[in-house]
Image 1 (spheres, rainbow, N blue to C red):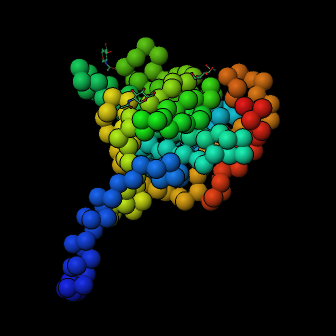
Image 2: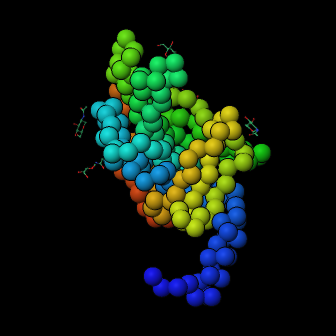
Image 3: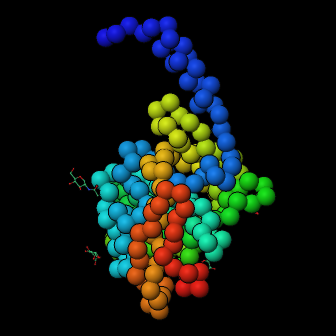
Length: 217
Ligand SMILES: *[C@@H]1O[C@H](CO)[C@@H](O)[C@H](O)[C@H]1NC(C)=O
Ligand SMILES: *[C@@H]1O[C@H](CO)[C@@H](O)[C@H](O)[C@H]1NC(C)=O
Ligand SMILES: *[C@@H]1O[C@H](CO)[C@@H](O)[C@H](O)[C@H]1NC(C)=O
Ligand SMILES: *[C@@H]1O[C@H](CO)[C@@H](O)[C@H](O)[C@H]1NC(C)=O
Ligand SMILES: *[C@@H]1O[C@H](CO)[C@@H](O)[C@H](O)[C@H]1NC(C)=O
């Protein structure tokens, strides 16, 4: 093991300074973010809205994407969540939820973020102890991210984002998994159940180009 030189020691000592730099600007949200081992990532590797299916990640986790405004002025978000919850009264009953939703986000004047779903989200719930143990249902909840969210640079995670659930509970820290923003966009006509149509992956470094005009959405 090479001993730390004074220079390295100095750099390490300075890390907390950078870790504390928290920013809350619209541009600091932009990107694709993933918790933990980064196995859960928004986009075509998680959900396939054309047939309301999921691709199961190897680990649980959450992922958020926030895109810059497209030509139509829409700011898109997408969320992929794979979570397990245990039931306190029945600890052996572990419920798994795969959840996919996207829509448009708006940063409010007070700094909170309102996520308005597009109407085509869905989730799969597996609860071995329930009467119906495995089913898929629509998910179209509007969500609020309270105004104390922030982006920061973490010594381990790198570019990171701290979000909170509506009740102020911190979500797992998210790290930037790609400089591009990965969201699924719809193309073709939506004249099918729950607007689930034909989807394509849109991903560019600077601007997300949605494959559809706003009129189709
Ligand atoms: C959904 O479509 C994908 C891609 O065509 C396919 O691989 C997958 O098996 C389908 N899933 C279901 C549940 O139909
Ligand atoms: C899960 O891990 C296996 C073995 O490493 C790999 O073959 C598979 O592609 C992984 N699945 C996903 C969705 O990442
Ligand atoms: C836990 O299980 C009990 C009994 O099945 C059920 O009544 C209750 O709603 C469950 N709680 C949660 C949080 O799922
Ligand atoms: C989904 O929620 C949004 C926001 O509340 C609403 O405008 C839209 O009509 C809903 N779509 C469906 C299919 O329920
Ligand atoms: C900020 O504005 C949103 C939307 O108007 C509201 O729901 C929320 O309660 C406000 N306060 C905080 C702390 O987010």
